[in-house]
View 1 (cartoon, chains in turn yellow, brown):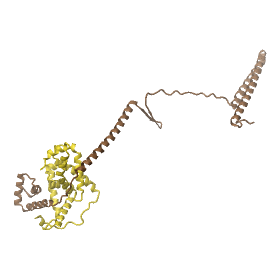
View 2 (tube, helix red, strand yellow):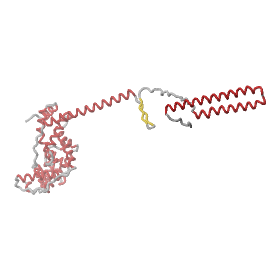
View 3 (cartoon, rainbow over the protein chains, first blue to last red):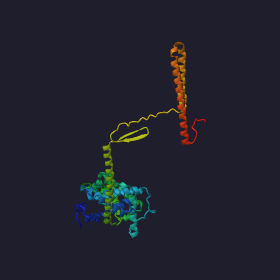
Length: 184
Length: 213
């Protein structure tokens, strides 16, 4: 168990390189997961993560203690992800030629891969606001108050949006061959 | 609680985001409503399915970040240096303008920038060219004047012959002097023409314009 986060952040802000290293190791996978879910598997997640932590490093003096570090970090990641989406919007999005086949109860490696592809495809089909709220709640574990601070949207609005997003996700997975057998 | 209310709450219940009292009410509705219970089971399965997504393994290179940060800081310093130089030059220019207080005038197709104390208008030197009468002027003017004057004197003489014989001799003398003056003038004029002709020939080697000889 490493040092607690406020202490780690205090050391990082005072210029201790080891503290920054520890913060990066602690947060690099959540950030990568966040980017991968928001942008899809073909996104250059490693490069974007590198860019995010560079921005964190350069913004050390601008960090304020009022909010949680994770909220601040995800705001940087979200801005970068949105920039990336805007740039990619000018280019055609490559979609799989075939929709993944129905998933049976026996989960062989190839079946597991199909499940993953189906989830990635369904996530990509969600509208960006829906995707953001679903990813932040499901994969990043943020509560709605934290999301409200991050996105600048009231928590009640985000709760409604999350319900819609989860139901859309369910419909999309079914459309991609989601099987009741797998659900059980 | 009815099904519409339950439908809004089920996604939050799946993720444990309801307070205890609301969760209890929803649970009571689900116990009595197979449709809503099935709806909750589907969304719970969707949540489970989402966990199947793979997270790419990455490793952020912190050494590269520090190198990039140093390079970025160097770029920022260079930008500030350039900005400081430009600002300094601008400030110096403004100070110079304040000190010398130039006056700018536009108009008449000209841009005039003037600085320093305004000086008096430059004194315009007037050069008077003395026009020496040329040969043609000389012929017409002097000869004509003498002739007119002679005619006038003769007219006076003729007029006085009848009235004042005593002054006739004096007038004759005056006529003679005028005649002498005319002759002398003609002689000087002839000499001047010869001199001008000689000078022209020596200088340009040709005949003087108007000289018919």
